[in-house]
Amino acid sequence: MGRWEPDAVGRLRIAALDLFGTVGYEETTVAQIAERAGVTARTFFRYFADKPEVLFDGSEHLEHAMVAAVAGAPEKASARQALDAGLDAAVELLGERAEFAQRRSAVIRTNAALLERETMKMARIAEAMAEALRGRGVPEPQASMTAQTGVAAFRIAFASWVEKPSTSLAKTIADNLAVLDSIKV
Amino acid sequence: MGRWEPDAVGRLRIAALDLFGTVGYEETTVAQIAERAGVTARTFFRYFADKPEVLFDGSEHLEHAMVAAVAGAPEKASARQALDAGLDAAVELLGERAEFAQRRSAVIRTNAALLERETMKMARIAEAMAEALRGRGVPEPQASMTAQTGVAAFRIAFASWVEKPSTSLAKTIADNLAVLDSIKV
Image 1 (cartoon, rainbow over the protein chains, first blue to last red):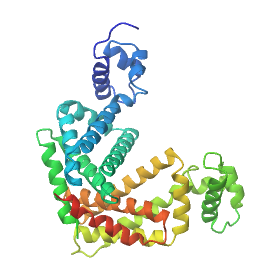
Image 2 (image 1 turned 45 degrees about the vertical axis):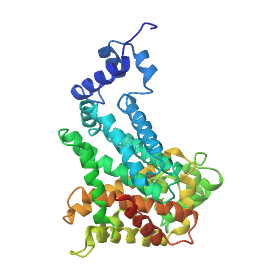
Image 3 (image 1 turned 180 degrees about the horizontal axis):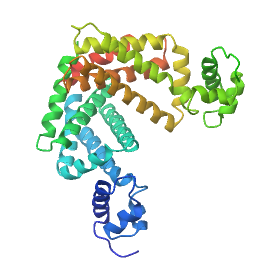
Image 4 (image 1 turned 30 degrees about the horizontal axis):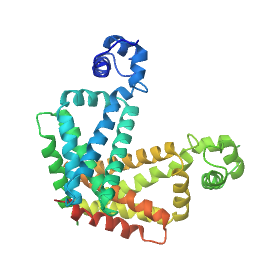
């Protein structure tokens, strides 16, 4: 299959979402996804380790973008400012893919194993953000608490945003973080 | 099999930790755990669905204790006060089992699948706490942010406490929550 396959990855992702939404996640095979995308199953497995990864490989881009933004925040930025830089990077990335994110979430919600994988990916992102904050010299427990709280604000905002993409994801994240005022004693 | 087995559950838990610590988690079989505890494998499976559950069935007690304390906090208690009641319940439960908690954590740290199960159990506890807060009339996103932040403070404190059980788990949790001051803008 040495022939050139323009954006095979993009087509596979869309084909998968189309089939998961109509036929169902469990019922869809990799062969069907590949066929719909006009490629072979072998091409699918060149890009994705297994069927669920067609929904999750974007998490790594998200993690890298967030970590890079935290690490790249101005030297004098506070932990919160570095966190905000990371969250802004996530908003920017997802804003470009609102429809994809929404359709993807609709599939994940239907399946306990997918929800579990999503929870694990977000836990890994929070760990990576904490590591990036420590790399900036933020001490513990501030680094972990900042990262965990920020990722919680992101996840909770993301869940409302996929329901109602007309709202501002950035504003909802900020609103969630503002709630911290009521949590401190 | 019908005979009385005083505290078979407790003996199975200890036998499992003994073997996981010496032989290794992967290498230990349910039959070996049962033998060491002086019961049959059938008895093991009467109490635990699978080998890892011998490490994780306590999570449900923890969840129930925390949720009950949140739900049972005085009617006028704030979201933070209800959260604190839940965290206090966790501290009380774990304080009685410090050595067990510590040995259990040492095993979990060695195995990616166990770490994943632990992450999922804690995610479930955070969800249950958010639900308990909503049940008290705490609106969203305050309920979810309070529960997620509180569970993060608990997890991070727990990780230091199992390393150094002479420290106060309650104080470390409170210190972690105090860090929120630096996270709000």
